[in-house]
View 1 (cartoon, rainbow, N blue to C red):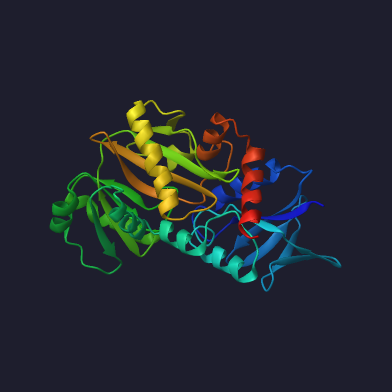
View 2: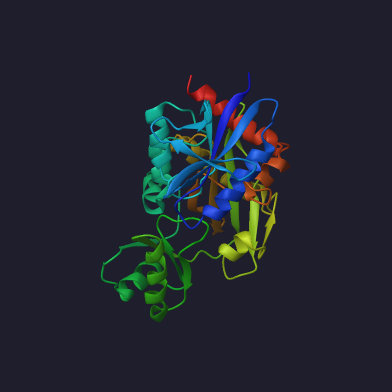
Length: 327
């Protein structure tokens, strides 16, 4: 009997359009012989199932079910394709845990931790995972530009602490540019992380649990046409993404090990995509994404294809792993 799969997409953040695209690709790619999949749009003002005719049916939040006439649809598993809140920050993970519904993402604590750049980097530091020098600010804190310069130097990056897709990020070259960059970041999140500029190759490393084994996918090198890998570079074609990355075997071996170590140290499940910049030959961690893009152009699906894993197999495997984890 075919499993009923809810593909959740949308979300409450600036990334909702990307999420809708990711979710649609998952829906199109899942093997129909094995699954009946349902596109569930999650927004602050409504949770609805949207059918192929774009008709909307409300989701009963008490048990995450959908009523189609006299038929009540209950789901065997949830494929989480929400980038940002509430799908990547632990909220949906906690909700599904309460309802005992399997899902394809990591657990609640791991999602909340990795979504918080400051906390994630701090938690990994004792394990020898290196990252840029950093300075933390919260909304309302006085801005001491001299202290920021002493801590991280210029140029530096001002980032929203809990935001994805390079929203709320600015490369800052001098003290006078700090206020505007901080104002932009605060619009995305009330916490900010300011990091030193790392001048080196940027790579992205996908890690998944594939057929029961933690598997590191081929490494992608990112070359932005812009000043850094911002939203335009990520989604509007202003970057080159080279898989496999043109780096030495020594560098490749080390960054593969670090990405796998992060996955295992944090006890992740499902998908992860960790971003690094090589400085002095060593990979410095930027962030860990647990709901990476699932579009055909997205980095992790491209890495999977290079590893001989089709989109259909990639998404099917995630559901199999989720179902097995909950037995």
